[in-house]
Image (cartoon, rainbow, N blue to C red; front, top):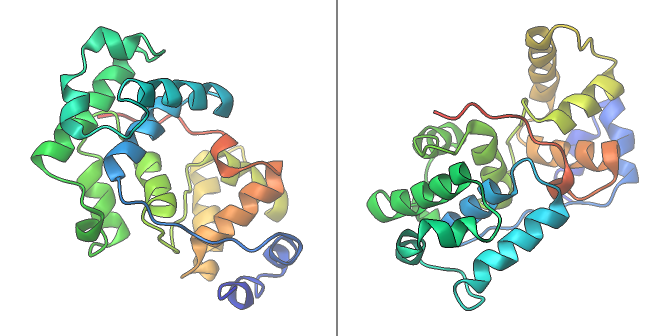
Length: 212
């Protein structure tokens, strides 16, 4: 893979990259549905999140709903699939934002990572980490570093022997180290996740996001 020669310049990361399977990023067309699924899965195990998302799709005949369909779905019907009151509101917020402002991946593709983050965190229920995951796994961005992700933090503490007692200093150290991985920081994150728990990225621990 094209990123491997660059990332293996980091001697500590090199053993992870060379021992792991190469990664490929995919792009998704339906950003609205991706965000809704991401919100539904927050603070849940992968198994439970998958069940809830399948129930969600069943409300619409097994197909991804349009934003208007989500808006028109009664609140209690969404509660009935296992969503909390807050998550129902957040999912509806995403659908409303899609209707009023739009999330066309072609439009988002023209923007920088920070521009996409600033645009989408306007949605109540969507935090920075959620948009970083969207950048990686829905928009296929190669250079995203999720400094707040607990899995990445734990992996880097272990691999680089970082001091975890001071969170502010920890994040500063992580950002400093990650600079050498640019412009392929997403792939570095993927290898760190895989090395730390050897499970798909969707199973890793999520940070508690600050919701505006």
